[in-house]
Image (tube, rainbow, N blue to C red; front, side):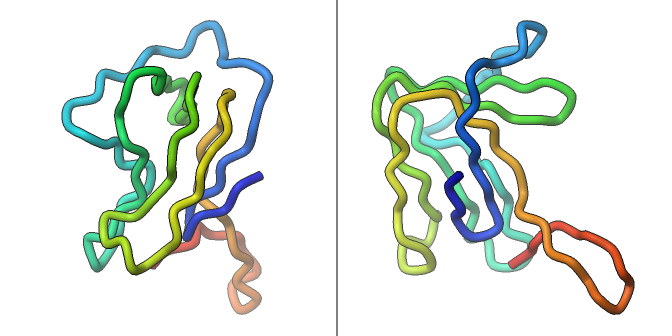
Length: 106
């Protein structure tokens, strides 16, 4: 598992057969939007990097190494992902006052 800010990426064996390929416009794909600062977590688009989605779950298939990074480079280090298939999700935290899990936010 790889953690980058509020994003978690978990290596999986396959993409569900019914997942749809995501068409990306631009130089990167936002995998977690910044709620306040605009410092989104992104993965650069290049040959060998594809995204799929099923039921709100995002998958990354990368045949080449690729980086998870932030738009504002000083906020988080880049993390290089080895080739594979990754399930992308938001990290969860437990709120002891409400006794509930919630998504981590910046």
